[in-house]
Image (cartoon, rainbow, N blue to C red):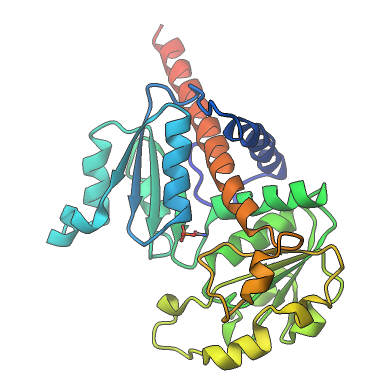
Length: 315
Ligand code: CP
């Protein structure tokens, strides 16, 4: 692949290859000396048109640990504020010969569009309600390390599914790897075309969590609700917030995940989030750096192979 725009185009073998390489980067990241030269000489530009803590920080660290020259564009201070379009901004940066462009944008499809206009590899760091591929990959790595496998698991994705790119990318990835995925949440927060995913849908947490291996909680994404129905946080926590009682219906060794940012007391009880016997939320953050290192390393190998092939033709 030239870009990483979503999970949809990836073959299960490509997903496994990214996770296998990421496992090696987990080991590197735990050493005192964390550096490799996989991206030596390459330039990475991070363009975040939406707020981020985990994704932006981990892409920056990933690039630096692999030896790239990393630039974080301050989009709030860019000429976008003077009316320059996304495409003109991308073309301007493209003229500076970056090799890797990491882009987060509030509009679904914006990152795909941008990828068609530039010469370098583009990584989607989350586009609207569409996809967040590196989040699904880091979630997959977390599950594989905690459960010892990434197939034939019962996984419940709970909460605001309708507005979640994390849910969408995870649904696609976990389905490709032959897991049984359930969606659990209120009818108002389910996507309209849910049938296309071929998953079970539950509106009751007790039923939805029964005997699952993995409980993945999601944030209420009010910023994407566009004036639509917003549930009261109190009522939502009562019915859908993960607490000890609701979790007791999952398997005894079920793990609890959350992509962050987390709203304690809304979609998850703080005690559950901090319970190191059940919660793998901090592991997810750790896996995020390793997965982004692996994804950029593999894209850089493809870039170099394409360049070498061009040179062979010229000779
Ligand atoms: N999970 C995630 O994408 O978090 P950030 O918005 O902090 O990057």
